Length: 111
Image (cartoon, rainbow, N blue to C red; front, side, top):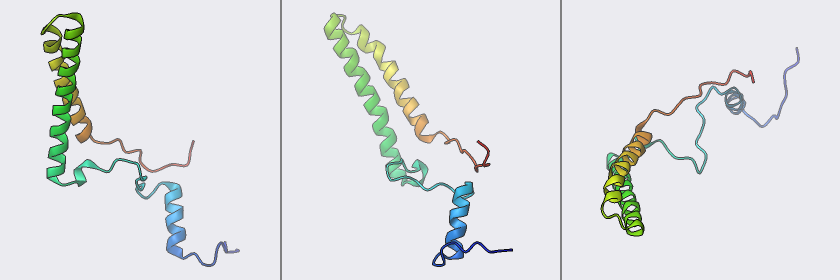
């Protein structure tokens, strides 16, 4: 049997890593623009992010409600109606932050 000569400068570990990456056996490395894992960050950073997302959702909802009240002259009905929507949007954002990410698992090679 002939041995695959390949590039003589590549070590066994480099070739093994390429083969494992090709088969999907190693965890995928993050791309430069990809969001890092939230749970790996400091508790202070996670807490600040959660608080900021909740407050910003409320502020946007109140601003939209107040703006629509101003346009339609229906003060404060639409502002009151948008407050629960802002709360729900903030809770959905927090859920997305902590929800388990779907793992695609190893590639099987079958398309």
